[in-house]
Length: 224
Image (cartoon, rainbow, N blue to C red; front, side):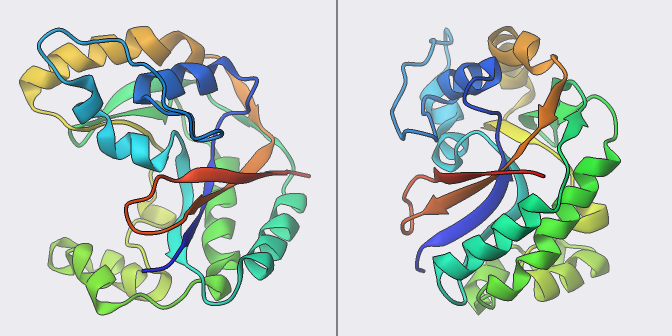
């Protein structure tokens, strides 16, 4: 697998949520710097946040994909898309249990956010290399709905459009006992700054240099 590109939303550099969530995960996706994490008695916070740390703090709009062509062409399409979208208000975010994972989720539906995500999926797809058999198998199509299997084949990812759920991952899947300990810590770390209403003004291009490499913010493209 070669380098991958993902279209994400991430809080602006000056947003306190960027600093708080980066510290929670133990890495700043803007700089790549490792950050000290506050310990959790009896639990390994570094292990609990390892997967999320590798991806960087973000909300997925178009999931990471291998490029069919070159980065410059994909970037040009992303710049055009961003320029055509007006900045919009994002509802307050809250720490939630998402199928056993801790994540920040919007407190109410945001049609502008859904539309932004849908356009990212559609308008950058010409730059996505076709999924390999191994990539399809990793999504466990036998466990997906018919609509999700169709999306996996058409768009390279099953959870798009009506099946997309905004989330900013904060942990791996947790047991009930772990959830009881980790959730209050996450709420203390990021809950207050996440609950502040904000405006989405950027589309972030995250890149991964190769398999297992951490994702980094390559560019922040202004909306409007």
